[in-house]
Length: 188
Image (cartoon, rainbow, N blue to C red):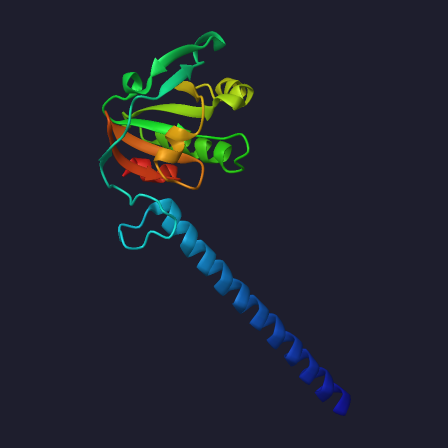
């Protein structure tokens, strides 16, 4: 009887330690998740700029002097101005071959387009010029009607002050309407 009591006490201590560990892990995860949400959803509280991101739906005019290299058609490159691809309701999607979330995130975006048949925004994908092979394979893997462009450097991406990829930038001509890491934000 005493042995059973001792085993129950030891078992309850072990369970208590496990519960405390799980609770602290959950709290740490929750804090990290809230920080991630703030960075990807651009909280509209402008005083909370911990990640130095633009708030969601804050409209500003972007610099369209950037030159892009179009590699879409037959993988031949042609240089174009950013201003020529920006139309009404256009989405620029910044991807990177080192980004672990980019491919699956983009597939979610394509799935959302297919589910929402009345979605009428055009979109273009932008890679850094150093990742031309990744851009070509990405274009080959995803058989969808979009353009793939290369930038000489990351200045355009950095101009949005977004620290997390993938990055979806909803534009209306030169006006940026929305920036997010989530494809779901492009359907609001």
